[in-house]
Each structure stands twice: as structure tokens, then as C-alpha cells.
Length: 341
Image (cartoon, rainbow, N blue to C red; front, side, top):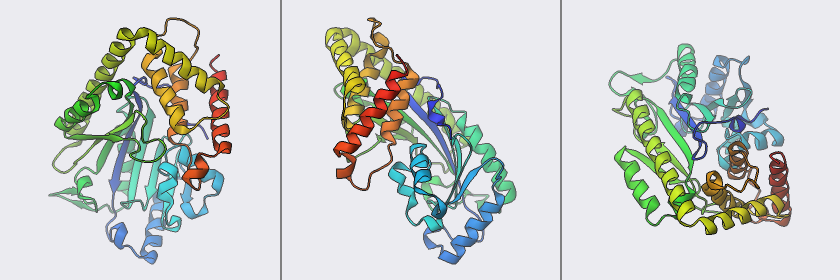
């Protein structure tokens, strides 16, 4: 299976990925929290019959082996650390060849169509919309003339659309008051920003999610227009902060940049937190390095970042930080960097 996030993306110095999620529910079934096991199996069968097996792999999550779970976690189908696999017998996941388009059954709403692209690409909406329309033509979707598509989560009622940008903001994060100012700016667009992880080993990374909030009373076009204006502002702000730090503190920045690369390239053991901190500094100074000594493409930098962020979870936090895990992680990073030399 290919990895969709290894493809070159626009503005990928700041935007790691763009995702569009469209949720739908089917008439005749209770919302998921009130669906009993018999009804749930009927729902899974109904959707399975509507899914085009010539396009999609997958099926009932209870049938996934461990290797499939690990791969789909890394490819961002099952949620971080396979968080969506609770009660797998009540869920199903379908995905195309590179996992850039997927259909999830039983997670929150009856159906979630998700399209993902590396970098900044709002075209994912059209991809998700096309599949959502295909499913709507085969299934009796819950819809109200007054309220739009009906959902158990009131914030998704209406269009049922959610857009998420995953962004790396090392410079804004290192600028005093930078994240606070950005948070205020994001709220003016009626969107939200939050850390990729708010606790645990990678809570101090410089990676954030910028996401749409309400869909009721807002058309798809309005939501997309706001999102594109917002992400353009974020990209400009992050690049401006990088230039300010890289030029005003050039010697210090160049030194940390080189040390960070050395850590990733030669470390025999490395934690997720340490790896992400090094990646943040490399991202910040990457376009200002005029030495020519470090060969590192943006695409490689993004692949390593995404691999670390979506690393399949170990059974416990302690084991994820074990010597064996840190050695395995460091070896994987070294092998990727060798390919750029």
C-alpha cells in the first residue's frame, strides 16, 4: 500500500496535510450511541453493499490483523494510536489504494467520508463530496429541508462537512505571544486551532490542527472560502516569523539547525519528543541554510514528521519510550535521511 502523505504537496513547508470529512446518517437507524448490536450489524451490511469493492479495500474492523492495524494507523485511517478501534465488531473501514480516500462506518456518525492530501490542497473537498454523493444515491440519507443533513453531533448538522489543516508552526510557537495572537485570529474566521496532542509524549511539538467549527447555517462554499483565507494568513505569518528568527539570530539558528540534523542523522536512540523538536528547528531554518552541506528535501522532512506524529501506539507510554522503541525509531529516521544524500 502506498503512503498518500509521501507525495509532494503545495505549501508543505507549513501545511503538512489537508483533510475533508463529510458525515452522513441513514434513515431508519438510531444514532450510533443508541444503536444496539443487531441494528449495528444491519447498518454495517447495508453500507457494505453500497461500497464499490473495485475501488475500496477493507471491511469490518474485527477482521483486521495486527499488520493491517499498524499500517492503517500510520496512514491516518484509524485515528491516532488506533483510537477508533474500540468495539471493532461495530465498525468498518474502507480505503482506496493509497488510503487518501476512506469510508468509516460506526465512528461517531453512521458514515464518514474522508479525503486527505499532503500539503495545502482544498481539492480534497471535491474528492470527498464525489464519494458522499455516490453513497447518497445508494442509501436513504437522513436529511431535513430546514436543518440539512441530520447528525448526532449538533456541530456537524447542516452540511456535515469538516475541514482540517495539520500545520507545523515552529517559528510562531517560538515567538512570544505568537500562538495566542494566532488563536485570536483563527477565531475571527469562526474556526479553531488546537495542539496536535494536548498531553503525552508529543504534547510539546509545534504541530497544530486548524479546523472548521460549525456547519449549521453555513454553506459549503462559505466554509471553504473562510478556510482558504485563514490558511493563507497562517502560512504568511509562519513564514514571516521564520524569516525574522533566521535572519536576526542567524548564527544561533544555523548552529541549532546543524545540531538538529546531526541528532536525526546519527542518533542511535531518539524519543518522539526529541525527534519532533529537531524537525521543528530544521523546518524553521531550512530555506535559510546557504551552506549546501545538508541535503534534505521538504518531502523527506514531511515524511519523517508524519511518521513520528502518526507512529502506531505501543501498549503503554512506558514501552513507547523503551530503548527498543527509541532504537527502532532512530534507525527508521536514519534510513530515510540516507535516501536524500
